[in-house]
Length: 250
Image 1 (tube, rainbow, N blue to C red):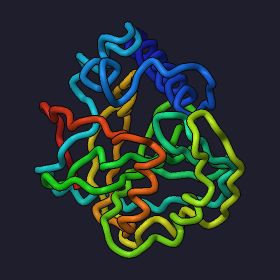
Image 2 (image 1 turned 120 degrees about the vertical axis):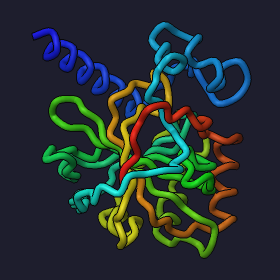
Image 3 (image 1 turned 135 degrees about the vertical axis):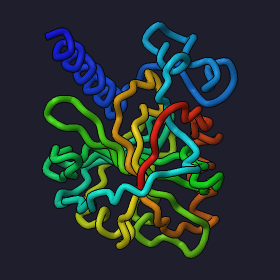
Image 4 (image 1 turned 45 degrees about the vertical axis):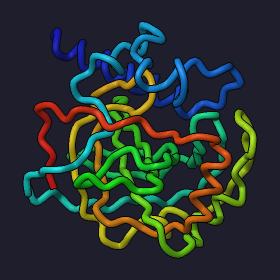
């Protein structure tokens, strides 16, 4: 009984966290990526953020070793359109109409939003990428799964350009963005991935998140990276966290 209660509370906490990430608020941010509100201080900024400082399964990580476990193939069923794009002061986030799903561990997770970090938060074999996208999913029990996509510098990404064209320039601004095929176009054909248990990469850094990091990156031009950085004004990536005793599988 106690285990069930604990699991329920954790799921409720994660659901609340996802709602907080997805919300569009005009309140002044109490955490950031620079100065005394930066990542090194997150765990001390609020009792609600203490996991950022004491958690043992924090994200992002450097994926350096992995166990070949022949993971089940993933086939995202992203069938719905985006509806809006938000500059929340921490990232650029694209919100999604309900109905797009991803199945993991026999559980169905619904895609809620995707957002970006520059440079990448996760590293692969010590390599950092100029941009990383996080596709954030939630199931009916409040569990979270994040599908991460890396971008490497190369040709202009024409699909990403459709998103960039609508980015609100100022923090706490929101605009309409209706794209019906953006997901299929953005994701690589090869969907092999690394998997590990981790956390949200922003306060409150809640743990219990299923992470799936795609092995194959897609292209982005230097100009596109610079355009995103100019709007954010500074890097918006959390530093690499200790892997500790976690197992990374592929």
